[in-house]
Length: 546
Image (cartoon, rainbow, N blue to C red; front, top):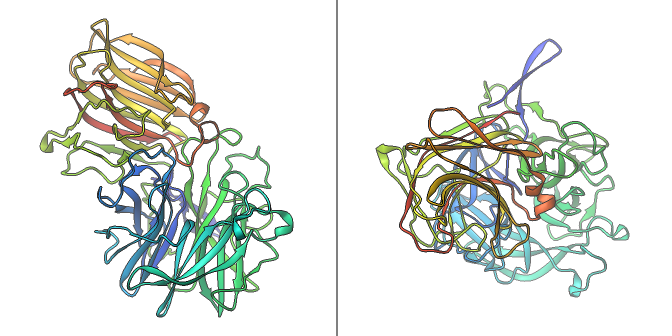
């Protein structure tokens, strides 16, 4: 929980902190209904899918659920971590909420609907005619349209990264596309410069103009946001001569505390006619290395000569901006933004919304034990190296420097039985801090995955006997930007160092690849052997030390 007061011209001005959703919350889409604002983000192979957030002031956000939280909605068996659900868009029209999204490698593009954004959301209605990704919806009166990133004309690329933005009319009653597909943008802002990866399209209307905003440059360091406009919804669209309207790719990479890779924006207009943009960005700790994934940032949008401006020239994304509604927002207590403390004692009847499974669960392997305040987890033969649903409960790493810790009770009976905590980027890039047995002696162990090893092999980095262990073992993983340190305690609240200064770059997106961020995960496995043993987690907490 962080807020800042800036003194301008003798007046105190309350500010909010970027990112507004820290950690792995990429591809934000936003809509407003009255005085309520809603954001949805990509979730890839994690379940439940598509987290939904609500705010009444654009800065204090609360997660209200997931749009895809039932197994019949979302089958992700065999999906790699960075596949699954890509780039949703949320919109509201005449009392109905719509989310359009892509389930990559499986059903393709789909629409789901709800009368209440908390759910329940409908089962997906598949849009087989939409050949592409990053779909968006635009409503105007009784008309609706689906926009999406697609193949180049004739599926012949003029250069690497050549893509298009296309559009269908959309039958909102029957949830299907109609008419002929229309080409809106071929390639990007200027084909003579060989633009790459035009994607993430959204249309909105202002002062008689239709504005089409898109990401361009690829969702890495060269990422940007660009804008086109037209007097007709189906074009022709003219590129703004001062594009891009958002990027940080031209700035000094050695600048202090940089925010990079900015793009994939969506706009929202406040009731009093002001505009804001939400977009993804990253906070690297060294060069282009970041572990916590692509995060959600927000800045004001200014209009000049009929065009929107997010940042100009060498302007940088700021960590603090004035709150949009100072008469409403008296304090900023956003527990998803940068510096916060979270603790779960597992006392509820259902898991906190912040927990994620790795792929859709195929069986019941975890239970909350009510008043006992315990989370019971059965060891599964599946491992986090495979493409099934292991006994894995993930919580996003949201701090560059900070820690996550847990306490649990576990009685392993064989060396293949292991339980504890992961710091996990993908199937072949993780560290596993766990309790097990070795030569029938209880031990605490630290493993490192073997990079790009498809067989799930792990390297043992450290092992120590647990001579004084009684009931509960406590584990802690401390993040310090480019390193992790691993600790344990046998119940006397005294932390013992197992191994320090372990390479964090190994888990960075640049090294590991993909589109996600690291997860701290409560994890239990019997490594290929069916097992009835259980582990009982007492609590989990994470805190920033930024």
